[in-house]
Length: 240
Ligand SMILES: [Zn+2]
Image (cartoon, rainbow, N blue to C red; front, side, top):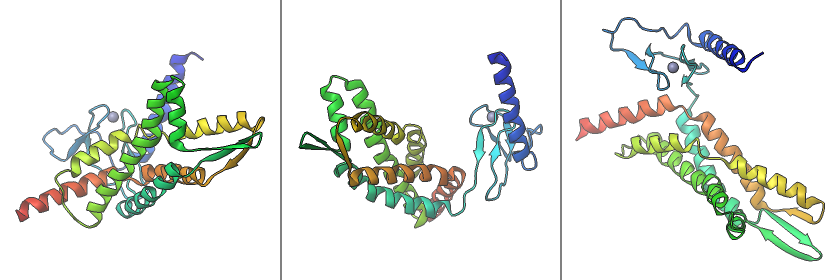
C-alpha cells in the first residue's frame, strides 16, 4: 500500500468516525441567511451550532477537528486540579528527584540541576527547550488554569480572562513534561549498571504533576469556558 492510499484510508476512517459522532447534531449549512452557525477553526467549514450533551464529541464533518467535548463539572475540576498542580510544582522542583551513589560518594539531582547540567555541557539549545517545556510552560499553564477557573468558579469578571484563555490554549501544546520524564528513564537505565540509584520525593511529585497536567487537558471544556467568559463580560457591561 502506498503512503498516499494509506493517508486516504485514514482520512476516510476519521471522517466516518466523526460522522457517527456528530451527524445527528451537526449539519453542514447551506442557508447563509441563518445566523446560528460557527466556522470550523481548522478548515473554516460553516456548521450549524451544535448543542452536545456531556459525553458527546463534536467533530467537524469535513476535517475531523474536535469542535466541542462537553465535560462534567469542567470548571470545578479544572479549579481543583490546578490548585493541586500549584502545590505539587514546589516539591517537584525543589526536592531531589534521585540520589546517585558512586563509590560511597552521593549526589542529589534536582529538576533544575538537570537543566543546568545541560547548560554547562554546551548543550544550551537543548537546555532552553527542556527548561521551557518542563519548568516554565507547565508553571504558567497551571497558573493560567487556576486564574481562569477561579474567576469562573466565583463568577468574577476580569478583562484579562479572554487573553489568559488564548494563552493557555497555545501553551497546552508546549507543555511537555513527558519529554523530561523520558530523559529520566533513559538516564536511570544507563546509570543502573554503574551506580546505586535512590528515588527521591521530587520524582514522585513530578510524576504526580505529569498526571495532573494530563488530567487538566482532558477535563478542560473549552467551549464552556469561552461561553462563561462571554457571559461574565456581558454581565460586567450591564453593571457598568
Ligand atoms: Zn473542519
